Length: 107
Image (cartoon, rainbow, N blue to C red; front, side, top):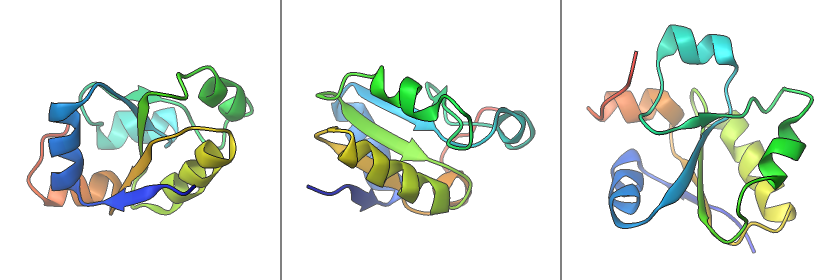
């Protein structure tokens, strides 16, 4: 099983249709300086407790991951699949792509 990479617009549609776990894998500092997507939870992929926090989430619930541009969320998405998550997405282009698509960012 693998994760799905989708455009910001497709992810926004998915979030309107389903109850998802939206996870920002950037650092807390980046979240403060660059803003975040409403409703997202921060689990820093570089944090020592990333795997523990990830595994605490419901593996049967749709999981959507994002970072700044897409690199870290790709790594996080693969880790989630390896950990047994069934429905995993990453936002193509990260929050930068989300914002450049004209979608709202909380600052």
